[in-house]
Amino acid sequence: MKTPSFLSQLNPLTHPQQICFAAAIITRSMPNYQLFLELTQSGDTQLFRQALNLLWDFASGQQNQAALEKWLPQVEQHIPDREAFDMYGVHPATDAILSLSMAMHCALSPSTEEVDGIAQLALKTIGQFLKYSEATELKGTELQQYIEQHPLYLQQLDFYDELLATLTKAKLTSPLIKEIRNLSRNDDISHLGVSTAEE
Image 1 (spheres, rainbow, N blue to C red):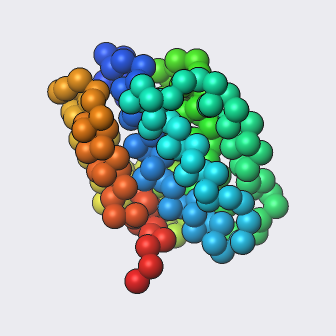
Image 2: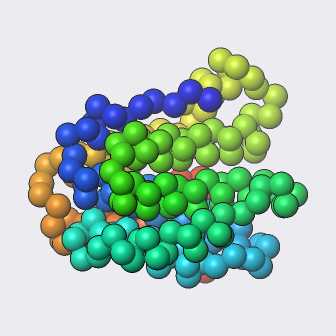
């Protein structure tokens, strides 16, 4: 499916701001990965969380590239093989950790296009989820319109708008990063509406 580009909004941001933007998107997608691991009893949630924390620390200037270089191969080893699992959940889980890998690469080697790719991938994950769960009969333009008008898709776009507005309005400080992290956690509910929080 076609997704909008955010390059024009991302280009004015500094490298740490772009990594912060990516980390926020990944934080919101993390419950998809966590739920998949719980259902399959595979993988390593703690690895995902620790690598994501490295990204947040990098954005705040508290971490250097050496730690990312050390952790990146471990993250990539834990990207699920989509063909090995006969369940839909492998797809959003793979998208989540793939985005984490992409963001770590961006931290090591700045790429606004790659950060834009992370934003677009999250929207594609929503689109694929809606096609699988609600719109199995729709195709082409009808499917695109259904997805683009769906609350989950619109909420993700609103999330991007809020992130970009917050990052643009002020210098990236520890309090601002804390504010963005709290926003991205979304009460442990992912951009697909998935929650791993205990009742």
